[in-house]
Image 1 (tube, rainbow, N blue to C red):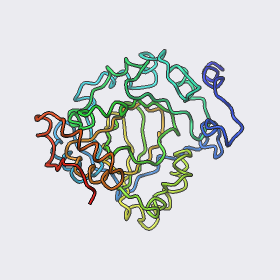
Image 2 (cartoon, helix red, strand yellow):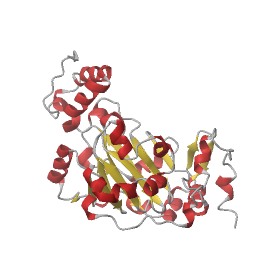
Image 3 (cartoon, rainbow, N blue to C red):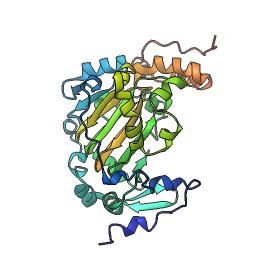
Image 4 (cartoon, rainbow, N blue to C red):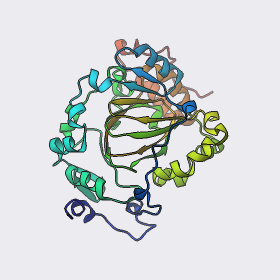
Length: 332
């Protein structure tokens, strides 16, 4: 029937090309929907490590200290998230929240039910990706389905009331995902997947033009379909262990798993099938010295403001921070 195509496709602004920001979510230049080949085997040399949420806290602290990504198992189940059942499939999600409305673009609104139907029918190389952030205005019931993991509860930006928009619900079909990027404000992130499979590639921090070119972090791949990076850049990184030399890490995230992305790490994500996830950014107390040093070099004004705000924290919270010089920076 045409039902599953009509609700959302009828609303799509079908521009004629370059000037239309929505056109990138409509074209099928490489016809990727016809030949998905994303599940080829991952090289073990660049595989991610795994730890258990139930018994791996010390190992996690070591990953934070080393600024190294890791996959965490069992978190959603151990913390008793209702999302473990409500978000477990497209069907359970629609049953619970099919009538919730989401803003896909500034001019395009859809119900969750219509969006799920769209993920089945569309042929685009980079389909629309559904998300909400911050306070989940209009989608507040989703907030009851998860909680901040215990390992991330101490968050400096939260203490300073600066992390309001760092919480995201994301839902998308095959070929959706995130283009190559670094998370903002020197934050780390966790991303918990309730259903589907996400393919991740991550690279250690680096800002030089040569480094960004080597990992494919330039305009064509920061704006275009994530799948194009996997087709064009990843094969060259696998030749002669180039990716391994750059510190590249690869993994496929499965339902129930949580990935930890450390501060400064470049990452790109491709959804292999229908996925539902929640993700948050944090400034863990132990990350603060490195963050202040980074801001001191890149945005000194922000570094000074942050130091001033830290002075206002309660004694109890200041005790959780590493030893810091919170005097004003003179940038010498």
